[in-house]
Length: 371
Image 1: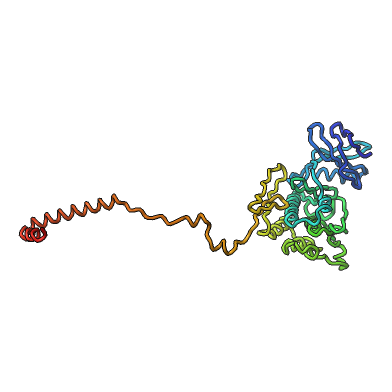
Image 2: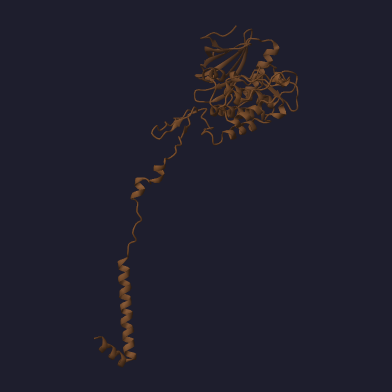
């Protein structure tokens, strides 16, 4: 029996509204009346062993993850003859699929920011011991908060890899257009599986269209339509990065999420003024653009300067303030000059005195001649 609005679950979680329905249950927004905070409640109504084990696996995976782009699990419990429940952070906002329906396609700079954030989450998950794979990355499983935070959610198909293990420990399912070919059969899935799905998600946000199905591509039934063919505004390097992530052969993709992120950021270098340290937790007061100076506000709240060319008249004529500036005159130190004249006079007098003593006759004749 599914939960109802206003119902109190486990004498603690007050149900506020339904956020979504899935194949095995629903997700609700609720209030933790013990702590006074909003939480998300995920229910599993299929309590047969296979589904129950999968749900417990999701709870275990999320409970051990701590990352800014992943939700945090705070509780997990079962109620006999009713269902299993997972309590996690409530991520305010909308999922990427809903956002696409309103704003498709996205600006390239916003797609790069979303991609870089999700690469960070994947790099963290793939570096865990044991490795954690998501295996269901798609726009519906990416949450965007009103402050611009990006979260990867819904780990129902997640898998844990122990060492060189080749068999799956999670449910296997596919989403056409977002799943790589190895996810369709018994082939091994690894970190490159998530990279493909992330590439497909970014492709969709850039073009507004889902990429061609990977299995059909491997059977040579169809080819991937280039990003720039669907959206010419996308830069060549960003398009190439996304298309590399979408290669049907795992060895041809980025091997690490960090490589994918670096390529996205390098492609944007010098093209946009992006703040990749975008606030995800505490909102900050955004600086208002100066309309007089021609500042503009980008879609991420980053102020960029509008560059204008000076005309010939402005280059030829210096600013009025500079015209008034003149080279200052060198001031003469009159006191120093007078001292020098006095010193020379004393030296002359002393010289004449010495000359008179040495040659009094010549000195007398010179005196008579002058005076």
